[in-house]
Amino acid sequence: MPDFSRISEVPIDPKKGAIRREGISSILNPFDSHALEEALRLRETHGGRVTAITMGPPQARTMLRDALVMGADAAVLLSDPAFGGADTLATSLVLAEACRRLAPFDLVICGQETADSGTGHIAPSLAEWLALPQITFARKIEIRDKLLWAQRAIEDGYQEVEGAMPMVVSVTREINQPRPLRVRSVAEAMTKGITTWNLAGLGLEPKNLGLAGSPTQVPRLFPPQLRPEAQIFGGSAPEAVESLVTRLRELRAI
Amino acid sequence: MDFTLPEEQETYRRVARSFAESELAPSAAAVEERAEFPWENVRLLAEEGLFGMAVAPKYAGLGLGALNSAIVLEEICRCCCNTGAILQGTMVCAHLLEKYGSESVKQRYLVPVAQGKSVAAFAATEPQSGSDIMSHTTGAARDGEHYVINGRKAFIGNALEADFVVALARTQSPGSRPSFSWVAVDRNTEGLSVGRREKTLGVRALSVAEVSFKNVRTPVSNLVGAEGEGLAILSSGLHWGNIFLMIEVIGVAQAALEASMQYAKERRSLGVPIAQHQAIQFMISDMATELEMCRLLAHKAAWLHDQGLPFDRYATMLKIAAPDMAMRVTDKAIQIHGAAGYCQDFPVERYWRQARLYSIGEGTSEMHRQALARLLFREGG
Image 1 (cartoon, one colour):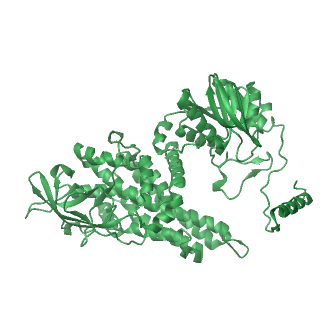
Image 2 (spheres, chains in turn green, blue; image 1 turned 180 degrees about the vertical axis):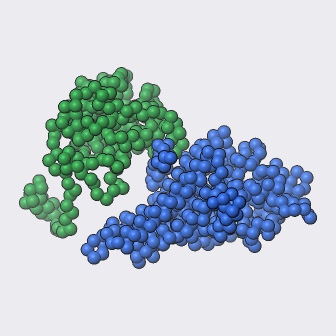
Image 3 (cartoon, rainbow over the protein chains, first blue to last red; image 1 turned 120 degrees about the vertical axis):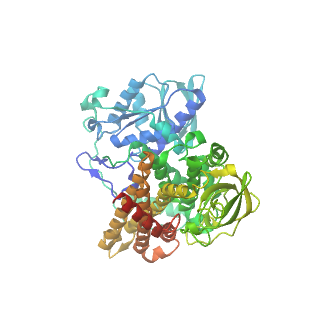
């Protein structure tokens, strides 16, 4: 995802209704760092190979290099101007095709959502495109007798589920603490190539990709207007909450 | 000519920044305030293998080379100058040991340094003479298979915590021409004592103290380089060390620039952020321009070293330019912050105090100007 921490204004492309990403470096989506960490831990326990995949502009390569520094065995960048402006459906279509080309695999592990758009759609969409079972919001996963067992977070607690692999899993931030990037790991990471696949390489139809392939249209993207005024609701906590809810209803915020 | 940092260097920069921001930055102000050796930070650097980052893998180092090491060190110093200064002092010793030490010296002293198990101090300056090396009096007299060292070294960085000292001493016979040599001396050698910690203006966690030698016996096998090669080694070692010393202050200046830009975006006057005022814009522009010029010079010197090409000229230019740049940058940083910049709640006064060291340490700017002039007249401009 774009690294907004070092710029003062988010540049928006009014035609695409999307963030203009040229010149903005990419960082690893924080949720995906947990996904990568979990993949590395599973590899340490069960063996195997970890491939980091992302769809993004060319600068997303730096994020993939960081994934290799963390310990991924390989990295794939899916990049083409035709992919730009994609919603989660068009994005997951491209990612699914990449997964097919990397098959066979046991698991596709995703972060539960991106920190910028926060839809949480990618993992379920991937599972559907790939016709694979899915477990979302996993806060703990284990491989038990060739099945994947997971404890998934739900609103009022958690549930335990298991299923046959190959499978798509999305993980929460609770699942682990990602290992830090280490200077001593850079040299080895630099020996690993980053494969780039574009539109031609994936053999997809342009009409299903990017803005053209996105049923979700963003009519307008704008930074929130800062309102200097504030309203304080006093009284006891229940009284303040009741006043707040009333006001939010007046403002049609809820 | 491609001036973009290759992916490898960008990766080192990014990874080092990630480490420094998460592990060093949060405690940087406290480290300076406490004025104590930051053992926890040193442990973190050791775990990362950074004390050996410029040392060859055969001696337990990471073998990053000068350019990659400079990039990593800048990120460390951007977040915590004290930690970077401790690292640089040890790196200079490691460089001397690797380049000039015998195999036994390397195994005994260099490997533990690279492994992060040993802190080193580099001792050249004396109380009565710093730049005037010919007036140095610390001597190492040969006694069988030992040197007996007598004298005093002053303003030695890492002095209180060093496990060993690499010291410059006169090794000439009476009546013969001046001759200097470098010798490694274990900290716990009888007769070696360390004075009180100096209360310095900045970089306060770096211990600076006098090291005294009173009939200190060290094996002849602890020579670093051949006897009598001390001045040549000093010159060579200082040029290499100066790249990294100046990278420290470049890191500090970068921090000052970033702090100033952030403050300028937040502080408002006359209804707008002060970043929109021309006076502030001019200062920020000058700071960024001068900083980048010095960084490019540092990278050039480091790159030339890595290619095995002469780099002395650029290391000397860097040693002249970077301290003055950093003083201007940190001074402007305080000015941009106004009264807040004069208060310790904001980091810029710390950067200003830290920056002041660098026109003095490892050869004053004046000495380097003299040395550069000699080089230019000898080799051409």
